[in-house]
Image (cartoon, rainbow, N blue to C red; front, side, top):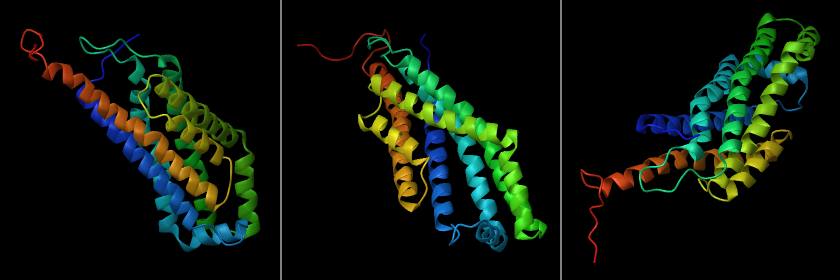
Length: 243
């Protein structure tokens, strides 16, 4: 199936991918710079209590990133199936993995909003409550083990992991993105399951290397559709000179 993506939709989708990616990268770097020294729950609780504004900013970035991302992800998934302009080649391969990947990513991001709201909200509430660290830790641990929190987390991770890989693969099959994009997507998904400063920095770079080319592909598609029109007269015939 083919479809047209309007000029406005492509530009909004491009902005969606760029701002969503930048927001998520900023959130990851903010979390990295504010990691508690010894990594214990008491240190984490003290960090949240000592900087409630910073914690709220981190929560806002974590929640806003997926929301901003969704429109761009869905538009990027439709790129291989976009109806070509007159005189251009038919839609390229990769439609199914790209469309499936974008759908999985969109679902994962929508669920991720709930996951992040629950995570930041519960820990922020525990810090504001003034409860002893041991009591607050039991409360947060109970929330982590509750079925709702577990389902939200795993659906988010599954959508992010498989959706990213499928979307990158589909767009590469359609030759809409450079060859390194699926490699960057694999690096990004692997580092999501690793801790520490180095994996976080590598993951942030891989996130940019994966999704910025997708945003640029939306703009490139806009230029590709405009080119035939620029070379055609009112009747649709080419205005180029022939020898």
